[in-house]
Length: 257
Image (cartoon, rainbow, N blue to C red; front, side, top):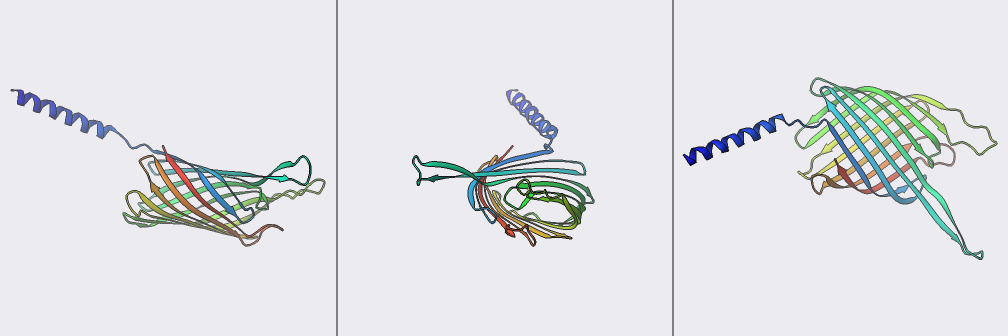
């Protein structure tokens, strides 16, 4: 009798746990915060800290993603030729970027996308650059350990060159149509690590831009990972006094929540 009672209780517990697991739904929200060291070269050469935030929402046929990142650095110099010595602080890096993309999936591997981005980099020669775009995307490789997505579509870039010091006249806002091609590759090296490569090429009427972001991420536990990344951006035409390229090499911690 005790055996039958124990078996009944065990069966009830198993049934309850299975019912609870069935009721649990995977959250459509994913978010992460990234913080760490970055070495910047190109239009500015400095070492500083970088902060990144990503969030996404996926439900039914829609996937929405938002991305934000920022870095800033000041360099202090001391003039010992005067008494008392004078220490001054000079801004050597200042950049922030915000972007968003929405995908509408149709079929198993195809989707339409719309995107928008805004970048303010004080040392690039531009006061700002804003972009919008629409297009078609397809997941062309969808294996267990490898994934490759391709995107192509038209867009528009609006920008303004750095303002000259008063009382010189300011530059008017400029804009151009462009064709955007994007490639996103993921290689899941192991259960705890992955390699990613994001490549974007934008061909405009006035200038062409390509950007590559290569990263290796190793998960420490369920919520914490270490990431090493290298980003390169190149413009074929830049304002006078600016360089064609910018590079960022970063070592960061990624918190997922």
